[in-house]
Amino acid sequence: MKFIHVNKPGMLTTVQDRGRWGLQAQGVAVAGPMDPCSHRLANALVGNAAADATLEVTLVGPELEFEAERCIAITGAEFEATVDGRPIPMNAATLVPAGGQLRFGRRGAGTRAYLAVEGGIRVAPILGSRATHLTSGMGGFDGRALRSGDRLPISESTRSGKAFMSRPRASIVPLPGREARLRILPGPQDEYFSKDSLDALQSAPYRISHTSDRMGYRLEGPRLTHSRGADIISDATPLGVLQVPASCQPILLMADRQTTGGYPKIATVISADISIAGQLGPGDTIQFAVCSLRDALAALIAQERALMAVEVGEA
Image 1 (cartoon, rainbow, N blue to C red):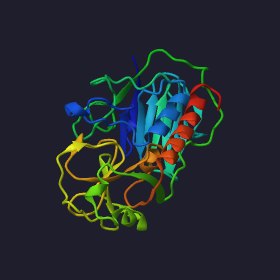
Image 2 (image 1 turned 45 degrees about the vertical axis):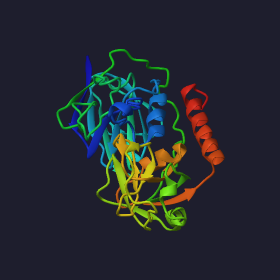
Image 3 (image 1 turned 30 degrees about the horizontal axis):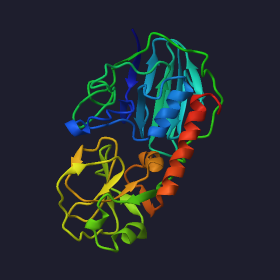
Image 4 (image 1 turned 90 degrees about the vertical axis):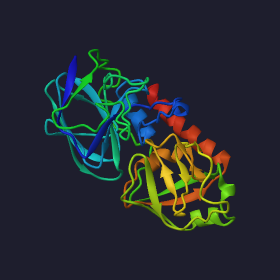
C-alpha cells in the first residue's frame, strides 16, 4: 500500500466522495462534497471514476508528501499551489513524483478546492461510501478532518497517460466573489408562509452567519413570516432546501445536513447552483431569485454536458 503523508492539514481538509445516497430513510446523512461539480471535474481530469474519493480543502490548504508518483488535479476555489516549489495550474492534471511535496498557498476566489489523486483516496468505505460526515464521525479518515502525521492510502495501480498533463481548462463552476446569485424553486412547503414571503426572500441579500458549517448556512436578512406556525411533522431534508425556524431567518441545508427536519421549507436552490453555494463561506452574501422549472432543467443539462465532455475526453 502506498500513502500520502499529511505534513500540514490545512484548516479543514476532509476525504469526500459523492456521499451516502439512498440511506436517509434509515437516518444516515449523505455528506459528500459541498461543490459536487468541482469534485467530479477533478476526478475526470486524472482519469478517475466520478465516485472516487478526493480531498475537500477549505480556506487554507494542506502540505502533502507523496510516497509514489501520481497524477493529481486541483479544481474549485482558486489556490496557488506548488509541487517541489514549482507552480502548478488549477483545472489540469499534473504529475507529482515519488517523494514530491504538494503545497497549497494563497487562496483567491471561492472557499473549497478539490484534490483528486490518480486512483482515488483509498480509505475504507463505510456503508458504501468514503465520504466524511463530521457530525457523526463517520467515514473518511477516522470520521474527522485530517491532522498532521496522518497517512492517506492511495491505489497501488496507476493510470498515468490517460489524463497526464492535460491543458488547463476553464472551471465549470462560476466562482463567486463575496456574493452570489442562487436560483430557487418554491417549495416544498411555501404554502406555510405569508403571501409576500417569496418576494421578501428575493428582496435583499442574505449574509452567511459565522455559525455556518458543512451542515448548513444560517442566513441573516429579510424575515420570512409563517402563516401556519414554525413547526411541521418532520420530513426529509433535500440538498439545498431553505428551512425556516421560528426566528424567521432561513437556513440553507448543505452536504452534512440532518436527514429530517421539523421546520417548513420555503424554497430549494436548483441543482445546477448547488456548487456555487458550496463555494461560499461565512460573511459572504446570497441573492435569491425564483426561476422556472424549465430554466432549472436547462441549467442542469448544460452543466452535465460540460462535465461529460471532460469525462469522455472531448473538452
